[in-house]
Structure formats: C-alpha cells, structure tokens
Image 1 (cartoon, rainbow, N blue to C red):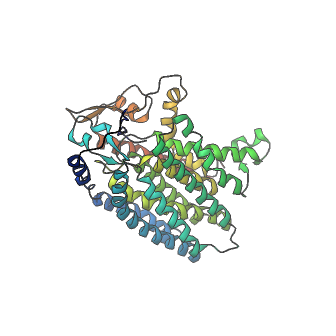
Image 2 (cartoon, helix red, strand yellow):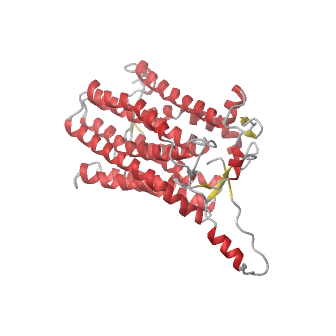
Image 3 (cartoon, rainbow, N blue to C red):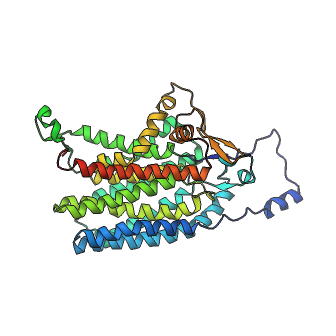
Length: 422
C-alpha cells in the first residue's frame, strides 16, 4: 500500500460523442514527462556499508566450503546483473503503465506542485519478473536433476510467482482488504504441498521439564503455522507503508539482516543439511536484495514510481519462504518486530472494532511540509504522535533505523540466549 490516490476512470455519459480533430491531436501529442533518474548516491552508501560485514563473514570470519562459496558468489553475480537489468527496465515499464492509466498522485504531497504529478505505479511487477528469471537461471549453475532441494526450490518460486500475479491483480482491480488476507494463503499452497522437511520443533530448555520431551512433532499444525506465517509476512509489509521508500526500505533492511544471519549460521555449523538450508535462503535473498535496491533508487523520496501491492506481496512472500525452508521462522519474526508492532496497533481497525478509513496516512501540512500523526492505528502515526511532526523523508529514515535496531536486537537476543534457550 502506497501513499497514492488513483486517478478516477473516465465517467460514462448517456450518449457517445466523438472528440474533435483538435482534441484528438492534443491527446496524441501529449506526452508524460520521463521519470527522474535513479538516486545512485543512496545506493553507493548502502553498498559500501553492507559489503564490509558481508565479505568479512564470507572470507575472513568463517571458513566456508569452496563449493558452497562458489554457489553463493555465482548467485551474487547473477543478482548484480539483475540489479542493472531492473534499473534499466523500470523507466521502460513506467511509460507503459502510464499509457494504460496505472498511475496515482502522492497524497503526502497534496497541495504542492509534486502532488499533481502522475506517478506510475505497480512497478513491483518489474522486480518480480527479474527475480523469477534470476531464480530460474540459477538452477543451471547449482542444482542437478536429483537434487534434494530442487522440488522445494521450484515450489518456492511457484509460490512467489503466484503471489506476484495476485498482487498485480490487486493493483489493477483494487481488491478489498478482507480479500487481501486470503491471497497469501492461496499463493502459499505450492510450497505447503511440496514441503518435505521436518514438522518438529525444539522445545526451549527451560520448558523441557514441563513438556516432558526435547523435540515435539506438530504434524499438520506445523504446516498450518507455515501458512499463517506467509499470510503475516506478506500483509505486514503491505500495511506498514504510506511513505516514499518505506516499503522497499524495510525489505532491504530485513533482507540484509537475513543474509548476514545465513552467513553466520553457515560458518558456525558443521551440519551439512543445516548449511544447505541457510544456503538455500541466500540463493533467494540475494536476488531479492539486489532487485529491491534498484527499485529503491526510484522509489526513495521524492518517489518517481510507486511499487504497488505487487511488490509488497512479492517481498513478504519471498521472506516468508526463506524463513520456512531455512528453518529460522522464530528469528524471522524478530526481524519483523516493527511489523508485529504495527499489526498490533492496526488490529482494532482491521478487525472492524474501530472505523478503518481507506488511507490510514498522516496528515500533510503543505505550508510547513511536515507530516502530523492522526489517530489511526499505524506505527507511522504512532511515531509521529510520540516524537512530533516530521518531513516525509526524515520520518522514513527514522522508521528504517527502528527496523535496523529491531534486527540488531534479534542478533543480540540470539547471542545472549545461545546455549540456554535451545
């Protein structure tokens, strides 16, 4: 969900009237201005900041097997190629969606000249398509016909593809939010049907004496949990939105944390199956991170494109898939701590107990250029009510820092509870 107001469709009249030749000529010659170029400075700063821990963990801190390291680097090279391809395709796709009337106006800039600019939306479809192409091509370099992970890998791609399709349908048809809750359940079916991993959980050590066993087999309940996790991750990205760069920014932060977590677990473990599970996660997260960075370069404030529900569904489903198949769903939920808080704040409105407006956005003051929090139950409004009015760019940076602090808290929690909790 983005801070946008869609253009209303042309109203039908009782009689059909043909436009005059001068009107036709004016319509055909009217060309929408090109979108602003990508913000490369932002990407450069992030790449420098993230590459230091990434290469340190991969080359210095841990001794990763050569075959595994080779696969990770091949995947990284494909992801870099996907980054440049996505950057080139977004301006092209923007022209097509504008021609088809898929554009909106930025509500958080209403009353300013920027608020009257047509912003192409649903550009998450570009990221999704490039991601799927990279995922399919990577199979040639890593998986063999008898690979144990091939079935689940293809099932993961099928679920992600299904979610991209349903997200784009939502962007075009504007599906009611109650129906949106069901869409991830449908998209997760290929993954749930193909899942052949364990359905057991390790009981935390302080609770073993109460449960009576260290490992508990949940059976079908575990698959139900997997489906609910997919629903939560997908919708939590979608409802924690409304600012330029927030949807893609939170995905970039969480994906970076997931990638570092995977590398740490691969380096610290001696179990080949456990390493492969986290390597599987890396194979999907690296393309997600690269293509999302390309989209962020256009979606950062002031946004040149809107990502649409296509992207939020795609990003949420991808992270849910890697958390499920990588067997670290608990860690994933802690990475999603701000999204959990946003969901709890939103629950009264989502449940219908409190009236829920169409857009639960902060109030924009065109004179000051600042956003003020409303009484709507979102983390965006809650943050503004606590810390006062802020500009859209400043607010987005603050919320992304909160997201990063939540991920750091997860790493600290795992460090201090290691050996005691499990």
